[in-house]
Image (cartoon, rainbow, N blue to C red; front, side, top):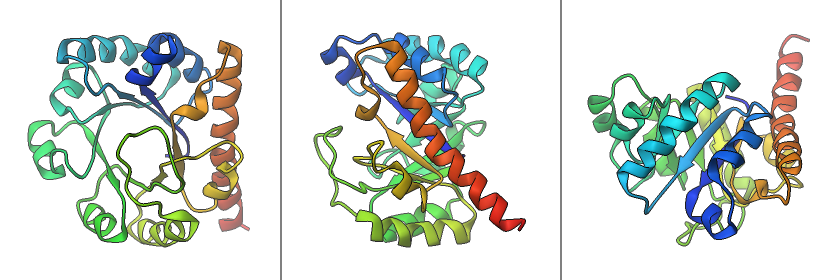
Length: 220
């Protein structure tokens, strides 16, 4: 997994008056590494409906669809991955319910990261790297030094690392030195569809380009 890990946060999109399906369409034109639906607070029926509409869109774009927190809805909605946090269902429990799903997990310190890596998830997310406004309750900022340490652990385990928290386009290249992907929410809010797609492409290129540099160096 290399590139943009885009997040659709339905609560924020509703506040801004943005249709989540239109926003998803604009992002998917950039063919990101993943698209996650974060729909906290919505009834299960509405979450499932959104997932079922997003699933074919993601398939066409060749982009994995990720559900947040709800493995049962992820399966019914045609998702590829379910993402869980530290207070959500444990990875082994998710796998017992939905063995066909990949699992990603958020971590916020090196102890949590080490435990998550032992469980061999599809990817691990680590942060917040910077201050973020996307969540009401945030864990302490880990900074670039923390991300560097996390990258070493994830690399040793052979598991992709997704950087989370406050990652702007200006910071993307700095983060790309250590993480395979960056989770981006507010950095994709723009005034036009064309601007959303352009921003998504720029984020994706920062990480996909770094992956190409690393691969070239390995074969030099």
